[in-house]
Image 1 (cartoon, rainbow, N blue to C red):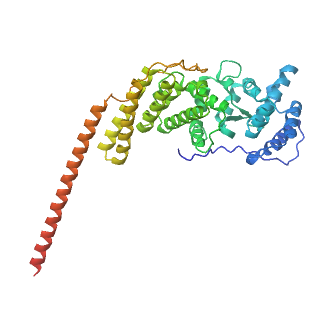
Image 2: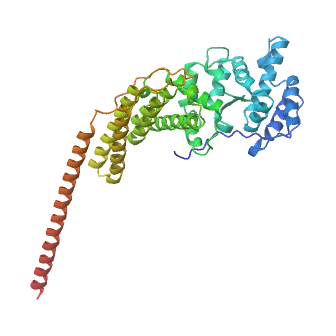
Length: 409
């Protein structure tokens, strides 16, 4: 993936100018607290506890709290404090240790739902990828941060509209790159345990909402966005498999979308590899017919790509694809021999079956090997002809040189 850096700068600095208003004082306190998280640092637990407790008395959210009951005001302020803490990786760890992290998802949706449509639009346009791959929005004039959670993608208070989701995920705004592109680039540098399961779920749900049941071809026409979509889905499924939590994710849908995105981006090799993962996933659930169908398609994708790469003169790539095609044909044959097995684990995720695009015309192993041999024979014939022509030209050149030497005498 390309090395993409966000142009949005979100580190805050402490203002030393004297302020008289309670609001300005609250902003300074927030900036001071935020700076304690700079460079991966973590404030002492007591400092974080004091911030959450004392945030109840600030005037920072005056415009949001106006008209609310005292009980509602207290609820919103506590939610705001937890959200700001959770926008930092070490803050998430603190809340998890205090058994409060599970509150943040609904906290953030409740807080965002209390904002005006105009303020929501401004904050979404300025969203950035924060610690550990989470999306963060920030109040424009105070620096209060809110990490997005899965509750934002539902239908309740604070839920994002489809238009807001599409702008958030695929509209570059002033960042030069869309958030999906930025996130996919950052995934390269994150360890296998990051993002955590909750953030992976959020990204999976966010992408699902953005696709909204439409063909991937309608997701974006830009190759870079399609590559980012495919890379992100592949990495999310890899993390789910490695953590043994694949039953919690809609793996079939994610891998199908991933394969289609790679195909539309022109990367048939990655498309075939993703289809192989999908076939393996279906086989593990003892869905033999589905697994065979996917493996058959994967073999055809590799085979067609091998023939195309060879005809384009990319011989090394073609040989690699040829090997992948033969291996996938063998795996397809093995899958056909599977018999019924024990009941597969029931997925805890809603994983509607997404129609698998055809991608390429089917080609059997026999047809592929015949076409491959024919291409090689034609290439050898062409190379032999070129070599013969070069020898003829060399002889003619030597004769011309001798003739010139004789004439000079």
